[in-house]
Length: 325
Image (cartoon, rainbow, N blue to C red; front, side, top):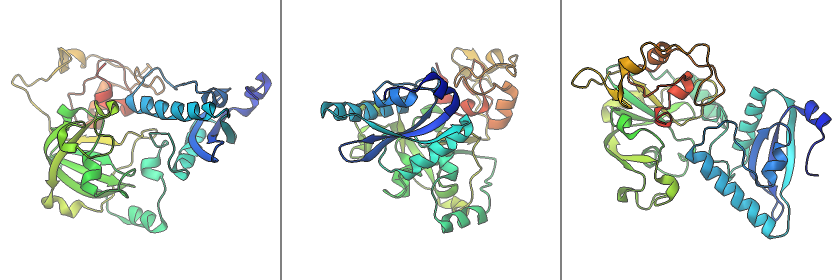
């Protein structure tokens, strides 16, 4: 079978599926979609929900396509299973995230929506998370929160948090403290002596070092912030619905240049932002969510120097390194 009939497509709505390697029965990809997306993916056709591309998506596509080509080279076809159907889009995202968490070793690079905050935990971890006091540090500092769910069980917390992230390295250098969070709890707090490209020699021996996919990632060298120990094991703020990016900025200090303005993409903050209201437009970057006013973005993220010149939602505005184009 290579496609659904049109009348069936109208009935099944959003669905979640697994792609399976027939050589060993191993699930190697979990996805969601509508129409004939499962068949397209099983054939190696790459699709994306939006026009925006990113390095994680390209890495994921490369891993998945390689697996599919290997299967076809063995004169076999990719197997697929529809796990749930007849759902709305938001429910499909939740089911997809749960399945991604349930199958280790997938070619999916990023976790499903909400997996950072609501993903797999033991009963004791769940108890600890919701019994913990909230992370509420002094607002005289800038904090860079990095989720290390994917690596905390494999390496030391310091190595898990310092390598390797897709972020704006200039903005990262303005962080006073780097917070390692896992499953909603602060696991480590560090200061950075300096930040480097992920392929710099200081990270030799780390997973992925030297690969092209690491060229746009960064890491830091630093030390534990002993003066912040009282904030360990506190509960981090929940993410905006739909956010899955592992890096969050909680910046409270305004960086001032010599003329009290920061030049962003050739324009000052006042010239590029102050008169723009985008409440009735779609976000230019994700093409999904409703854009918000720049004032609300600035109030929410505590920074008047976000490099945004086009309508954006608050979730995309939290990822300025992806908004530079």
